[in-house]
Image (cartoon, rainbow, N blue to C red):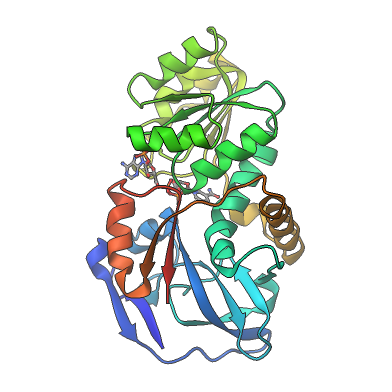
Amino acid sequence: MRAIVFERNGGPEVLELKEVPAPDPVDGEVLVDVEAIGVNYRDVYERDGGGYGSAPPAIIGVEGAGTIHDTGERVGWAHLAGSYAEQIAAPAARLVPLPDGVSTEVAAAALLQGMTAYYLAADSYPIAAGDWVLVHAAAGGVGLLLTQIAKWRGGRVIATTSTEEKASLARGAGADEVIGYERFADRAKEITDGEGVAAIYDGVGKATFLDGFKALGPAGRMILYGAASGRPDPIDPGMLVAGSWYVQRPTLGTYTRTPELLQERARALFELIESGKLDIRIGARYPLAQARQAHEDLEARKTTGKIVLTP
Ligand SMILES: NC(=O)c1ccc[n+]([C@@H]2O[C@H](COP(=O)([O-])OP(=O)(O)OC[C@H]3O[C@@H](n4cnc5c(N)ncnc54)[C@H](OP(=O)(O)O)[C@@H]3O)[C@@H](O)[C@H]2O)c1
């Protein structure tokens, strides 16, 4: 089968399309024919190295959807190493069945970023009606979903984006106010009449994290869930006293740590999709062979919504 392999850590150039042996399922695993692969920013961290994800040589990626080879059942997953491939040997307990109302492509596009957006809005800070929250990179994969879920919960969203095209996508997802990154904290303070926001959802990291505290309201939650611009500098916990603030560095793995939690979270996400409350925007599709281009575009901030690879 064909797969995208990285034999060393580095830039997009380390991603190579290779012919590799078909996976051989062991006990508890099934062979899945992959039909759509989700590209996530975490794939960039995995490729770059630094202890995240698989160590090379390995097949990159963790998300996809397809059919179980022996039964034809449609399934999806968000956490299986070796997903940029035509086939995968998958532990059955880590697969979620796909309902009729969710296409295989939408499942591959939605599972990881969708379950993430869901726990961010429901668990990291349970957004309540009327709350102001700040969503960074709101036109990205997680950002567009988080904005919609925040609105569905009755929240008010201040969104940051880097271009006019992205700003209009964030508005389309329901953002109340869309701003650029420059002086974003001051502007969020102004928009909330000096009160500050109840929570900041920050997947950008180094470029935004420290400034964000200036926009945080009393007992506000700083939720650092990623670092697309690099890891932020450390903070002194003592500085949180200024607003009795909380900081969380969450990961989806915690919220889907058992097969039961995974199924529950996937079902909740699929219900939102099937009921039309959550629109999954696939911003770009690439053939598997062009995974390198997909990474280049993602890192160059050229993409919006979800990127899907097709084997
Ligand atoms: N903790 C978790 O459970 C979890 C799960 C999924 C994803 N994540 C994190 O969520 C974040 C978003 O992931 P995603 O897959 O949905 O990606 P994405 O948001 O579609 O892409 C990243 C976006 O970040 C913004 N950005 C700001 N500074 C950047 C920089 N220096 N380089 C690149 N991008 C920059 C860009 O939007 P603008 O151009 O509008 O700024 C870019 O489009 C990532 O940090 C990822 O690691 C965390």
